[in-house]
Length: 80
Image 1 (cartoon, rainbow, N blue to C red):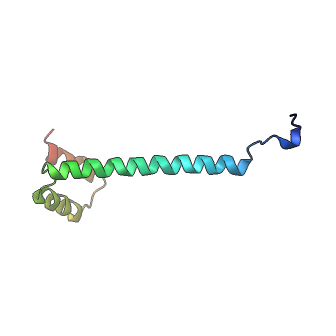
Image 2 (image 1 turned 90 degrees about the vertical axis):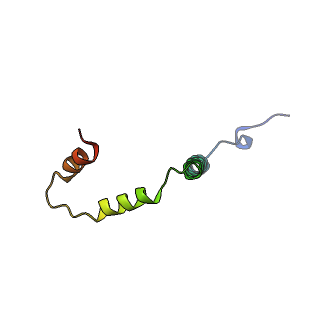
Image 3 (image 1 turned 180 degrees about the vertical axis):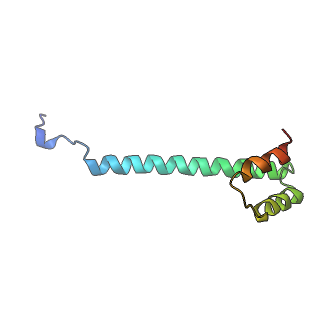
């Protein structure tokens, strides 16, 4: 059997874009799944105590007036 050029299937730009989108979506799904695995593993080990969440919420609520708030807060939190 012989084939001529009109019978040969060549990928179009649309099918290549769909393939790339499917690959990207698969990568995102795997990444999110891994994040859930890590979260629930840390939750099982007690890695997220209520005191830690309270500290984070209080940190977010704290008013910041000057431009170097991050450096100042990190010095007091970490004690460099």
